[in-house]
Length: 186
Ligand SMILES: Cc1cc2nc3c(=O)[nH]c(=O)nc-3n(C[C@H](O)[C@H](O)[C@H](O)COP(=O)(O)O)c2cc1C
Image (cartoon, rainbow, N blue to C red):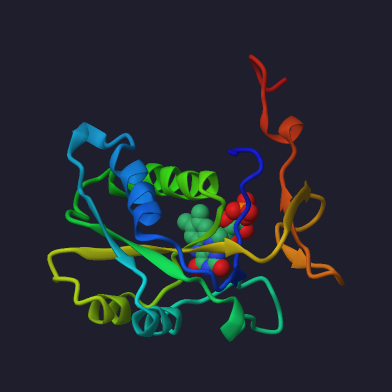
């Protein structure tokens, strides 16, 4: 799952059971946490009206031009908003990273696709979900049953992901040889 998981941005409109979404958050809850301070909370959004409002506060796939977003019939059917109790904690972004990876892998295990979004309108989301100001909106994980295919390819000259004529997303990744150094760099 770790190897095959890819970001998915187009979804079938079949709803996700709340129990499955809670299971994903539980995977986040159990992630490593610096000094075990557990500074993260989560808001699960499934209500159609709220989902539509959250959708309007998200920015998708910046590399795809012209400007692109999922169509009305391909939108995520749920969101997990990741909240931070203490952004002064010097390790909070690491906690978010570990928890988020656990969540997207748990989602993958449930047959769901996911997209982590940091390019979001924080204040709008805070207001839509009535999140108290003592909690900072960090990011949003968009979720749904997968309605697109994404494949990895070896990075050549650009990190920009792209779509081919069959609408398959291609994600360039640096090769293993490019990033591994054994013993020394010589
Ligand atoms: C911290 C972070 C922020 C991201 N923010 C966005 C975003 O705002 N919008 C979006 O469409 N994708 C976003 N992504 C998804 C990345 O574009 C995606 O992970 C990357 O292209 C690699 O593809 P992969 O996840 O399939 O390996 C984000 C991913 C991460 C880790």
